[in-house]
Length: 308
Ligand code: RRO
View 1 (cartoon, rainbow, N blue to C red):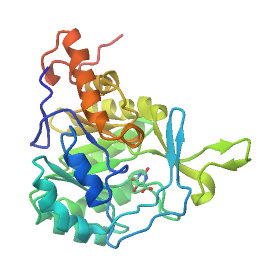
View 2: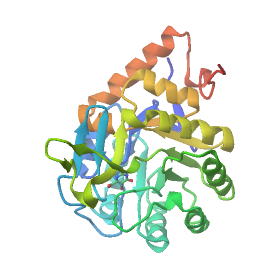
View 3: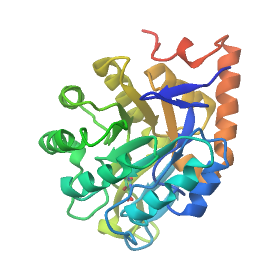
View 4: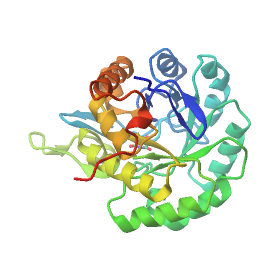
């Protein structure tokens, strides 16, 4: 099965890439992704200054996924800017995730990466883990204010990483805002923010930051990711690039996101737990699954969820 695809005009050799988050912070980690079967290299969300992130323990594997409150540990945007040439040299598209603490910081960083050789800029509007900082994607006015400033800083496609939504009116409001600006792609969804996992033995939360509140990831969130991709595909039409994320760990999970309308998918928790071999494995499973159904390319099934 031909798994070639594209997002915002950038060609991808297959349907899968890493998600911003796990194992994509250092040059060494990004090099491993470069040498894997992932179709692109996605960097950890960067901030203006380097950050250590939140106090540990800040990540916990769970039976059906994970919970984390990393707190944006990263090398600072200049380090990723300096890395772009060596990442590009690995021969696949480079996706830079940008997560400033203000519109001014995002402007500075987007402007810098617009002048780099990166392929896609994914501006993160949905980090749930910074104490005192709300998720921009849940504040429609702030989202609009940010988009009005970030979309005209260069020709490279700008996309936004969205929080999960749970109400049809929120899908409609966010889609209406996105349509007013030249946003070229969206990535749905970030973790479900501010969930609480309690260990009854220790009688404590399983992670330390924010009193235990953290982003829920993995299997738990697949139905939410699917709903968000499907809703935005229906509201934004076929020209919008949509990258699906949330609970993909098998070829059939990826196929479900294809039916919902995703142009490509990102793998977070499964990559965290399994390592870089997950990309080749899931790609092969997706190909086998589609072949068994008689499909020859992604477009044969993309967005074609059947009514019951
Ligand atoms: O670093 C994090 O704590 C983090 C980020 Br920036 C994000 O966007 N989503 C998430 O679940 N964790």
